[in-house]
Picture 1: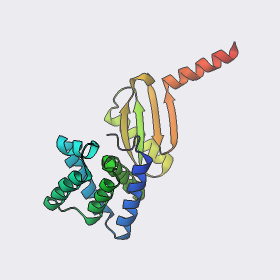
Picture 2: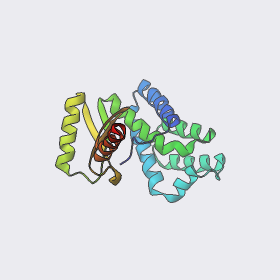
Picture 3: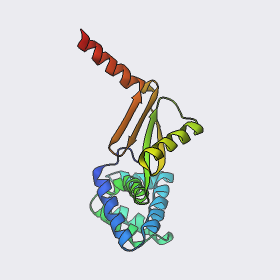
Length: 185
């Protein structure tokens, strides 16, 4: 699950604007439900995925297909308008990133923090729970973790929470030791 990793800033801005509009109309949960359903449709359908990600399709093609989807689904007007604006601005390829950013905004708004946990190997469930417990004590907020595996860190753990990074990986410790040893010569 890589929700928070590398979401483009422009996608974050669209998500924030959508959230602000949804919040003003008390529809933020409904919009999240619709966006999540739309994301699932795109991820489950290769043709639809190509339609939004390939610049070879015209805006007219994209609007036509999306309007057909909206006719068959009960999608909120806010989500329909968002998709129309994205198509008009030739940014519909950001749709999945916008959905991910919106989801993060919703979690943050409800007091939940998403932490990216990077390890060399897959964590066991009890290890994940211990990390969640420790991060909850540190932040005082509910924590959801997204696991990412990077074998090159050798062992240990890296945790990203927003712009904060906790790096207790063996790779970093070895690199620091190498720097110290170069300085000693």
